Length: 258
Image (cartoon, rainbow, N blue to C red; front, side, top):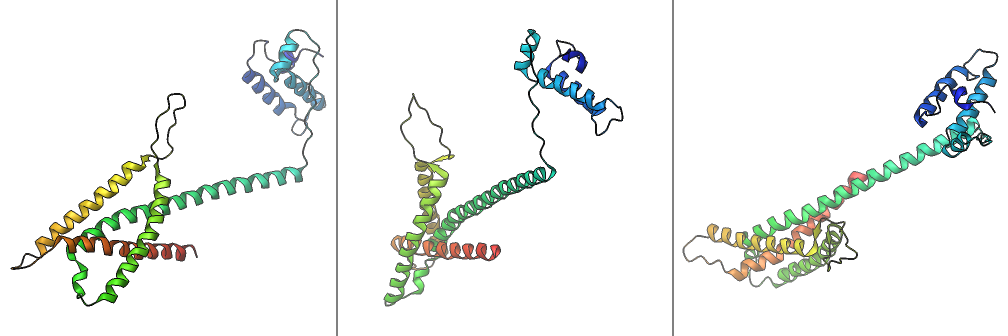
């Protein structure tokens, strides 16, 4: 069986890294494909057998105790065609993983842009509608127009409510009682109650600021700026505006993908 340590040229206290480095150095010297020595194949077989024993911690321990240890059989070499097929499959798998990551990142960016659109456009459209009062353009006899507007508003609220719920499910977590035995860390960064409270506070601030701006704009003798009409328009027009902009945003994304 010979001395495997002497074959690799290392001491018995050599570390696994030293054994691996010694094998690689000797393999480059005695590999039959690169060496011109007549006994290169036999020498390379001895080096390989020694490394299969000393490179395996269990076999090395048995060898150090003086037990008879046979090197494990070498792994069958793959054909060039099989190695090429395996490399192609690995490349396809890596490309698929990268494409999935890029697609997930793109969807997350689009979802985040839609959430920002809801917040920013919703706040400014509420402020503008409260301040300008577009319903003043219609007379009290334009009942059909008002019914159409309120129908569009209700449909917008239904659609936007569904999208808003999806966003809350994505970005917020539902607060529960903490458990000492099984503590859990939420995956989402914000609590649902905090986000809903912040949205309601922002909507209320838009109504207040919009009404204040409306009183400044309508500073005329005997000019009235009733609170009911201001809140009416602050409720009626922002959902319609937000629905139209959301539809345009979706069409723009669809055209960009095509």
